[in-house]
Amino acid sequence: MKRREMILRSLRAGAVIPFLKPLDLLAKDIENLLSSAGNGNQLRFPPVFQNGGTMTLAASNLNVWPGQDTQVTAINGSYPGPSVVIQKGSVFTANFINNYNEPATIHWHGVDVPELMDGHPKDSIMPGESYTYTFPVINRGGTYFYHSHADMLTAEHVFKGFAGFFIVTDPAEAGLGLPTGNFDIPLCIQDRRSANIPKFLYNPTMPDIMHGFLGDLPLINGTPDAYFDVSKTLYRFRLLNGSNARIYKIALSDKSPFHIIATDGGLKDSAVQVNSFFLSPGERTEILVDFSSYNIGQNVFLKSLPFTAPGGGTYVQGTELNLLRFDITGTLSSGGIVPAALPPISYYDIADVKTTRTFTLTMNMGGGMNIHRINGLTFEMERIDWETPQNSLEEWKIINASNMLHPMHSHSHQFQVHSRNGNTNLAPEDKGWKDTVLVNSFETVRVLVKFSNYKGLYLFHCHNLEHEDDGMMLNFKVVDPVRINEENENIADEYKLEQNYPNPFNPITNLEFAIAELGFVSLKVYNPLGVEVAVLVNEIKPPGNYSVQFDGTDFPSGIYYYKLESGKFSDVKKMNLVK
Ligand code: C2O
Ligand code: CU
Ligand code: CU
Image 1 (cartoon, rainbow, N blue to C red):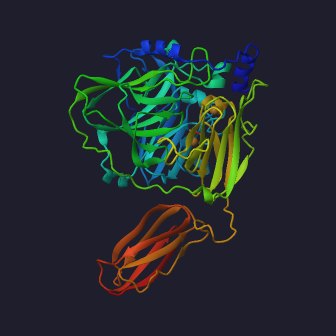
Image 2: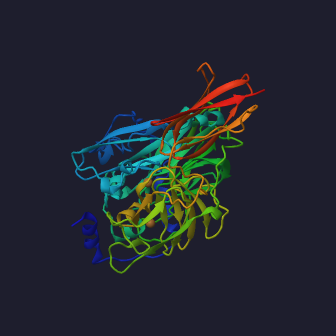
Image 3: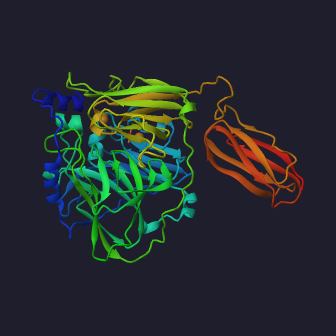
């Protein structure tokens, strides 16, 4: 019998199903429990992973609470796991060794990777075995996430510590003036149960499977009762909700405003000032917080505001919590600014949608097992639930027909949220590139998605990990693009370098080319002596048709050559600059 079935079978007999109940009473108790200003534990940071190195999964003991041993299931003995920090365009490699007693995979959440690198549960690494994860990092700069994705064991593995940051850096961000270095701080927010200290005891009951395994005690980067010393200056915080089920309504305890600058898939197109925002499991949001108006000796909490949600019993969604205390202790300056503008994002147009798919989220109370379903289905490892042609814009209409909250997540390419209940005026945490979106009780969320980089089998599921392990997950396959005519400009099935136009030119001309497979692309310009005079493209690119301009303003008249290289393909053409 599988673990989930065992748990569920033992519960089914006496299951009591709790329903909606106001949360405000409990919230106060928890506030009291946690108000320990003036002491606490200094915020911890996981070590940085050395690219190309080893990630070993094993049970180990750590002092999560000072002086007490907590058994964790963690990568390289670190909880959270070591942080991957890697530049866009480079190749990530990790040799995963499973020294734990259960099957496991590593999923690179939000990172667009080939099928066999995605950590699908079908590709589980058995105890004692190893596997090399390696892929080019093609995502935008941003804050991503890695975690276990083993079949029906994801929730327990993540709860016991198997999760970490995957941060993609992009040198193009350097010009924006954002805080960097010691002022650019990743914060992984998780919750555990104070009743079980110092154990990470994972023993979900039937209500826990229904609502998710919630705790009353926030851990920030694995630090309970955490504080962080800050200077009177601007900070960038990269918030990751690594909790199994808890949704946070992030705010500062004195209600000060701050700016949201990034969503799951990297920077937004503008910094937006807010007082609070929702962060559901799997989501990342980056914020800029300015401490310059505080005095030395003051403190302010990053907290979660109370909100109303379905549930009942000891652990409820929407509880008010203090997450992290900022102690204002220094006067250093980060030199960072809130940028007046951020690089533009091109938004999909719903008028270009080729296919609409509907996903109805339900709660099935009849059978006991597999409570949470998508289109009436529960996960089957071998079943492909639908096929999506590559490069075709789709609308996914996610209809939550239950009163549960479901943070819905897609693997592979990032998507864009279109609307909530028809309202296209989105909250700042929803607008930008996303891979996880919270779908509230009885709400319909529409997202627009196009898989342009990889074909293969990927997952769409609820990121409430108890819901996921309960089977609220489907398989989809990205297949060859549909080719009706050449109307879809992003389709390319062969390499091609076109003749430039205009030609002759002065001073600007257009160079067009097609790339058939994801890979490294270089397009360079040479003078008649064969000397390289300009680099127009020099990076990993997905398949597609591209157009770049060459500006001859600073070059003398004459013949020039341009050369395209990608994989085994190489071609050269001639162009004539006439001034
Ligand atoms: Cu972060 Cu398939 O999940
Ligand atoms: Cu994912
Ligand atoms: Cu769910």
